[in-house]
Amino acid sequence: MKNNWKQLVALGLTMILALSVPVSAMAEEKPAASAPQAAGTADLAPSARSAILMDADSGTIIFEKNSHAKLPPASITKVMTMLLIMEAIDQGRIKLTDKVPTSEYAASMGGSQIFLEPGEQMTVDEMLKGIAMASGNDASVAMAEKIAGTESAFVDMMNKRAEELGLKNTHFANCNGLPAADHYSSAHDIAVMSRELLKHSEITKYTGMYQDYLRKTSEKPFWLVNTNKLVRFYTGADGLKTGFTSEAKFCLTATAHRDNLRVIAVVMGEPNTKTRNAEVSQMLDYSFAQYMNHTIFKKGDAMGTVKVEKGMLPEIPLTAKHSYSVLLKKGSSVKDIRYELRIDPLKAPVKINAPIGKLIVLQGDQVLTEFAVDSPVTVDRAGWWTLFKRSMGSLFG
Image (cartoon, rainbow, N blue to C red; front, side):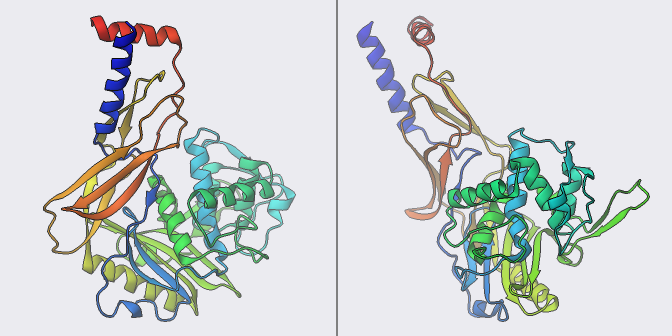
């Protein structure tokens, strides 16, 4: 019996190491090398202090200009605020129907706002509209207090999440982007956090809406008009966030989707809204004219299973919660594109989001991109009786 048990464990480890399946839905992607750039791409955003153009699926950089410079992000800060809101919803900590009270402090915010009164309550759904469309500083603070108790505690969460995403040139001092010391980001980092936000596909319901109302049935309805005019005037645009302060100038992280390609364009320090929108449109036009995506897995695809030694769950099912693809120049051959999963031997306990390996997409012997793979669930260690019954079932089943 003892020898049989050792053989079973060895067989399980061999199967894990030999497994070849796609990434889990909880994966954090490692951006691929920059895509080949055609002549003239250096002029895509001539007026911006900093800019970047990125494929949303693979993280491949199509174009960049001074993209790692630390600059004030203004209201683009709210991309991280919205990301933490969406993650709190996914984790079941809050619901879209939850009522969110407005503190005196939240109501005191200046700048862009939805004019919340102290004590006024709105749902999470309504607050998200106010943040995404009207860039409400007051709504951002109200949501920060709802999730973390205080804005300060929420800002700690923002900085921790930035560290988890590998953002080297980002530090937050508040949740709304109002001018503050030690509050900065970069075009590259904003593109990465925008890409993470877009994994929550429902966010574009808010960022892509051009106009709507708050307090519609009240005596004082408030008309919302999206500060990002591209969602109305650029085909396929459905987000994400504008920003302006006298220090930051005009900033924008925009996303658009056509056919099978979604891209993210970020500009910082533009002189005015007309130039900002024109240069972002030019960046988007370039990407859709020059590039295509080759899909590895679509959202919802079953991607296989990963075995867990001595786990309460003997294996982890993997399902794509968003698209996984590689960026190619239009007209490129897709022949010989393949993928490999290099996964570590898994032994319980395994925590949710713990790194378990990586997916490598290749064409021939050339690596096109890599995706880090994290566990989509927590797997506790099974008790001895469960393991005994499992081994008996394997022997006599």
